[in-house]
Length: 345
Image (cartoon, rainbow, N blue to C red):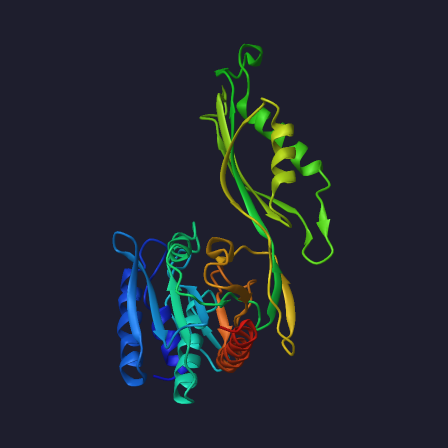
């Protein structure tokens, strides 16, 4: 199957987080055919009932190409025009899966081995697949993680810190506000204090940013609300400790904080000759740790189109990614082998 045809077929398999099984079975079958032709092994790595990572190994893997199977909702079927492939997952990350598979096929045809393909579940929600993989390393020295970076090698990614913020009050008839205590006003006061903060910045990663993602509470316009909540997310430039401390200080018993997730910022590997960038989104890389080797981040497509109803990727960018992944695998294989020769017996 040609690259664009494969990418389109992957987009047309709905795999919203939690529902990756059908795509996983498709990848198992496809990679098994590749392993039969060129010699290799393919396995499913159980994560949860009916959810699994897909791992294909060719030789003794020193380099692993990896991205995620799942997408955000809603499902959007594939379509294409002369320039773009459209649909959910076109650039995040099914176009990358296709490019990685075609790169692997080309490398095997050239006689290159000692690499792996790993396609994980759950990246869009909690990195469940990456955490599982981290407990089952295979000796890989380098991990090439695929996310939409416009085919530029990311030198760093921001982290993420997410809280549920809960405010409690006392209900009353709105005609007699002195008898109640508004949870919504408490919540708004806290959120406004957060918005006034000048957050720290980093010369490479840029500033810490805050997003107030959801707000809900109250029951009717004529009732003083006794409950309100919000979800907030920070994009981090470090491990998040200083941001967490300040958020708790500002909360100061006015609201309850429930930390939902914390992903630290990550500094990434570089290779001469590749154009570089910095990205603000979080990835599976912190969940992997170093269990699958030193991490690199690169992939076709723009993050500005991912997760949108207009998600799409340039066909030429997918074609270019196939060559980029081949080149990067070969460069990192040489680096790994050179390190092994230097280390000696």
